[in-house]
Length: 262
Length: 306
Image 1 (cartoon, one colour):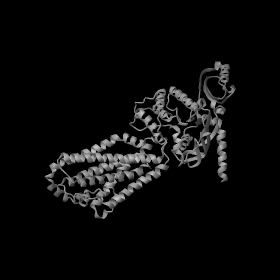
Image 2 (cartoon, chains in turn brown, cyan):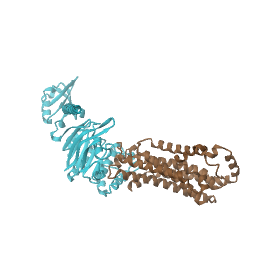
Image 3 (cartoon, one colour):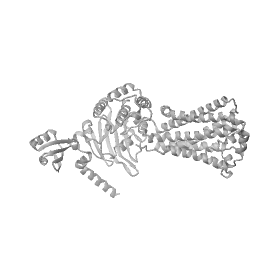
Image 4 (cartoon, chains in turn purple, red):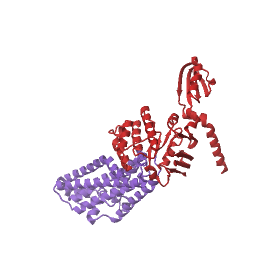
């Protein structure tokens, strides 16, 4: 597991920056909640009268007056977008960087099979995403405790689990792409994450586009759905996890045969 | 036993350079020079042997292991120095050296320390701050520290200063004395001539000549430029004599003593003299053009027969 260790070591600074940035934004939102709580009735009214915009972010089905409702919209967007970007960038760079930074000739001339390298790189990506989500969750719980509020723990954990799984899906897809490319990965990764986020917004607005929820990794991260049903939408989740597995399988197939760039 | 056995190995890269039905044998214990101009296919051959790229057709064995299905066995007993080596940004030199040893599950800290001292590697620097030559020195340490049976070195001296080059070749000779086979590629003829026992010339993805270095007629050729009124055409061993104004240039093939004696006979006509290594292109033009065109003709016939 030397490659895994080394991956985490050389990527530890971006990991900490992303974790603390997302965590800080969440803490900021949570800290704003007590001041806003009293005026939430009005806020709810305003938001509920904003038509599509309200639906786009699931605010038509959530109660802003409760911390968990507030968390689902505000913090959900932050972890959703931030986590998706981090997962996309980390994963798409995992295999690509060996050729982009021309370190492949160093690494791959050690007695390691390609499959071994892919496995350790994959585990490194998953570890980094897991570490980020644990840090973010701890900061969220800490800041909720700090303002003296309490939330239904199961709902909060389910929501964070959905964001975590969404990041895993995006990482799986990006990992597959990573095996093919030797440059421009970050653009592709962020593009993919943004695209999926947009698809989710479209599917929230238009009843005709609800099938898009199968395509986008955000389909099963809908806070309102989780709060109202007490669980993730299994059909979207199953498709998402299947896509992630496909990405990983593609990465193995491609990378074990690939001619590495000098 | 042969350290490297290549049979009809072909690698096509879309449209760019590759290698074509390459045959080559390197005996275990040899110091082998693989020489050719840039883009001749040296790196392609090496990268195919190491499994970085997959052959289009043909076969090859390294240390008795097939390159298609025993990659890790080959890599375990091989040390490789790429022509342009890069390391992970942010790592220190000492970390790179330790990481390489760890990936090989080798404990060779003492050997690494000796190599670093001899080559003047600064282990506390960040790899990002290293020049090409200094990166290369780190690469030499990672290629050699585990005392491999086979050393594959792709243009190892580029970027190294002359003192380090000398130390490097001393180390290679010691490795060879220990029993290691050394396979190095170069586009500098004198390097191969001075340090290798056997050599092969490669051009356009084909082997033109493969022999012991002492038998290679081109190996001793010198490019002589003289300012003055000397008549170079009477010097035995001189060829391709050309005169440009007050300068005459020619290729000299033969003993240095004879050249000096011949020049001594016309010493009053020599104002200045410059003796250098001819470029590889010149060498190929002069000595192997025949072999090359014969080779091409043969292949063309083969193609038409199909």
